[in-house]
Image (cartoon, rainbow, N blue to C red; front, side):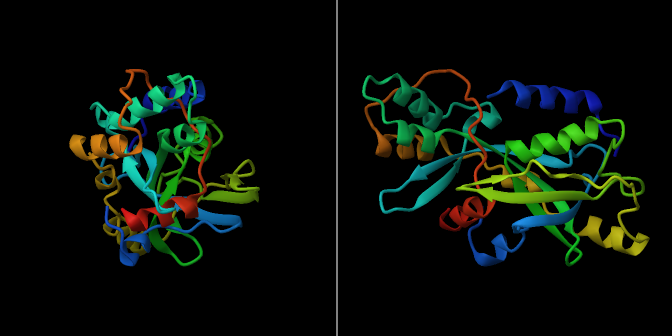
Length: 245
């Protein structure tokens, strides 16, 4: 598909200006990023109307027994979100619970179909805003352009380096040389194996989200402000939390 550069520029500006199923079979659809270099090929959408990535925001809600539940933010669908309301209420309190506020803050997640160059399988790449910004920046760079192009795109190297509890992706970049993604037979098989990444962006029921917020701090009523970006969360940790959802 032809990439809409204006749409990508708008998304890049937005990011720059802003500070499911749970069984093992489901999780096996996701690529597990290893420390060091991970070579992938980002695949285009299934047709010209389908964007190559899907976007959501996640609230990480503690359930009281040391576990965390991932709850999709309803604002990504333009709907009211009680957990966003709770987040802003927490910061307005004189004796604010900063730890809880940071935990429930909505964090951006992006899904895309990729070929894992280690085994040739089509997997879902789930990443945070930091790495996603690097991918968009590369696509807006005239030296690379549409890196998802199956005939003249670029493989992408995700370089993951852990510093404390946070992963760093500063060295991640497309491979300098463009290339065909694979043979005609390989490409056909990959495009037939695309995961429905847009179906991963769940619209949570309002009452469920409200009950989750009330269970944390029932006395809080929210604000209408828009959330800003939190620091990227560690990918394996995020995927593990999906098991309890």
